Length: 113
Picture 1 (cartoon, rainbow, N blue to C red):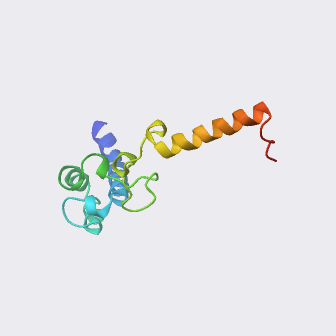
Picture 2: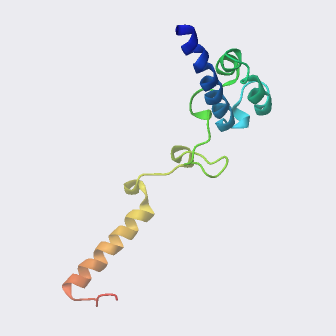
């Protein structure tokens, strides 16, 4: 019974591994090319084991995510994106908006339509 369960799970493991191979960025694969790995992982049991032990990249370099639609896009921390309160330009715009609203409420400036 256990052998039957394991036998039925092998195709699922191969399909999941093929999906993983195809989602992995080509430059992140450690050994061989993506096409070779797509064929290797079709070998029952040994293909997926080889992929997970030899070629699959580590960590976040593994897959391309939808959030980085631009190839080679850097994460926000690497781009130097700052919090709004650390951005002098943003603070200047907010201060001007506050002053304009204050003048408008004091009757010094007509409301914009």
